[in-house]
Amino acid sequence: MAERAALEELVKLQGERVRGLKQQKASAELIEEEVGKLLKLKAQLGPDESKQKFVLKTPKGTRDYSPRQMAVREKVFDVIIRCFKRHGAEVIDTPVFELKETLTGKYGEDSKLIYDLKDQGGELLSLRYDLTVPFARYLAMNKLTNIKRYHIAKVYRRDNPAMTRGRYREFYQCDFDIAGNFDPMIPDAECLKIMCEILSSLQIGDFLVKVNDRRILDGMFAICGVSDSKFRTICSSVDKLDKVSWEEVKNEMVGEKGLAPEVADRIGDYVQQHGGVSLVEQLLQDPKLSQNKQALEGLGDLKLLFEYLTLFGIDDKISFDLSLARGLDYYTGVIYEAVLLQTPAQAGEEPLGVGSVAAGGRYDGLVGMFDPKGRKVPCVGLSIGVERIFSIVEQRLEALEEKVRTTETQVLVASAQKKLLEERLKLVSELWDAGIKAELLYKKNPKLLNQLQYCEEAGIPLVAIIGEQELKDGVIKLRSVTSREEVNVRREDLVEEIKRRTGQPLRIC
Image (cartoon, rainbow, N blue to C red; front, side):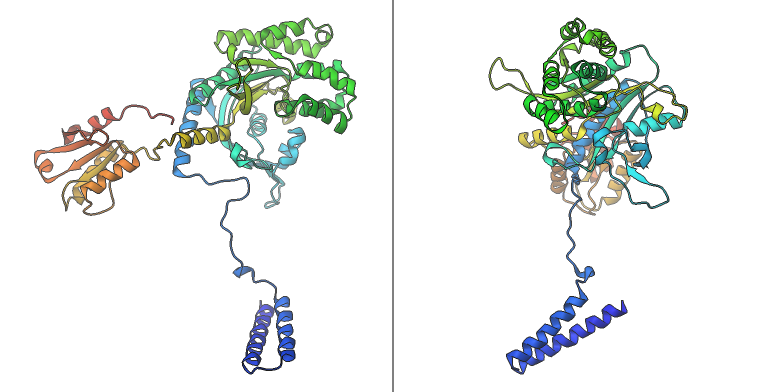
């Protein structure tokens, strides 16, 4: 610091010398020489970091949320949580960061997207990439073998963000999982039922849930001639079929991953098929695939799954799609992904998938990776892609120019004359104590018109008006903001009347 201060003083003195020479109209050569000295001193000094311009922005891939946006998010979360609870789930929470070794090796090619933290306390730590691996760690650490849980929290990915499509570096996941040894496909079917219930309740458009099984994929790769070491990397290529053409996927498998063209063609014959239970029946008769033990197990379970989905009344929303691969390494059985459908441009065309909004699957081996004795706890779960859903709902509201309430205030306590602040304070306190969501303006003598305008702007449905006559009569004037209808209510009946009038549940949006 002392050295910098000395340099700053030299710069100051040299600057004064240059200015003095200019005032004295000294020779150009002398001024140029002294300016050169000044520039050298400034170069030694370097930039003053304390005086550098501070840029106000959020980090790349993150965003702030306005009250309007948060109101939408809270209502979406409410729909999701009510569904999870309806199906008997308990809630848990885990730390936002984990030991790095907990996350390492669980995500395949996606592991490169994990955010590592600088060592701050003697441990190598990383921000959680999802909520599934921390859940598996939680089960192993607490020796749990049976739980139905949900978890809503932020996760972090060092990804290239695409904010307009709901792709961020920090975002929420809403997970529901069933852990335990149960008869085949009953928990899996319930997970798909939950996914359909939530997407239907949110009314974000038509959707389709694609279903496949990792064992069918592995069996298919084996009979097509893919070596065991290439199963996962080829899997990640196949998983891109919802975004790019088969030709591009084939070029990647052959050109970048060294697969023989004829092997890729055999894979193409399978992965371009999709349908319902009839396709499962067809593949059970496939002379090659039916001879593979893994594929046969997967097809048998999918046949049973479709029986349960029919009983749940959602089989029309489900498509058996052999191109669905789900890139994460930990899936072991049934996998699924919900996509929103775009209305076809021409009659007779199939609807197009425009983006994943939920996904999940079975991961029976993940807990065993953490257990010292390798004990396995079968698990199946789903994750709702809420960030994409938020983006869709926000865009729809913008298009409709629909007003969104950002508070839940039921009534504003107002006064019709001056010098009634004490009475307003007493009444609003009574309402708060009774569990009513109430407000008042923070002015001693607000104009009644200003109070009514505030209610209209904030969407507050009721106004409780105190006046001198009302105080004498022991009543409160209750006004409906939309209809402007006014009634006198006895003070002791006010709470019940407000509850009666505001008992309707809030709309989602």
